[in-house]
Image (cartoon, rainbow, N blue to C red; front, side, top):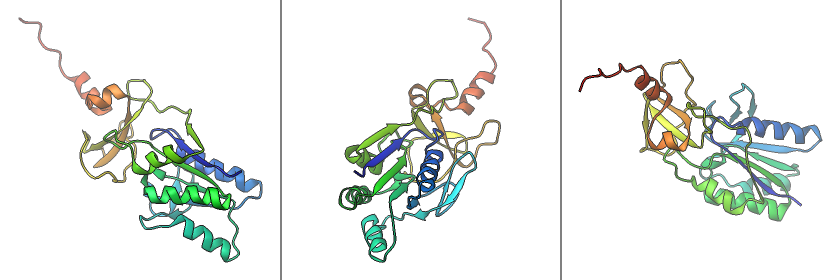
Length: 217
């Protein structure tokens, strides 16, 4: 029986790498799939991993219809055994419903990959719907780490090095790299405590380098 799988984790937990590996494993057994993505850091219609791996993909705009695409492909004589859906947090709830219908009505496996919450710690609509509908939900075991060494659970957005909690939900950027100048818009994974305190790695470093107060008073 086909199933709707949802693999989730914070940024830097290896979701896109696993998506590429999943596609490789199925393709190696003679199965034919399609790869989809949305707002990938590497650009349009590309599935990329931070390890440097990439694969061509189909971009998913807001008006894309998975059900119509799959039915049209099959009707034209094409073959589809599975779908790889990366950056699924950016899909609409209607698109997630379409994926579930593809699984149930056409018996095609769907493997969706995405983060649960945005930089405000609010659920993405697409991810929320996947939690509601997925046959299997898998939290990735490769744990991303906060700068303090604890397990990272939250995704933070920084603008010119400063953490923000307001703004557009979908803004493409990548994870901050240590010892490089802060990008205009970037992301960082933090533990809950430091996300609540808006204490990014850069800010923590600045605080630690601040001169100690004089022992007066």
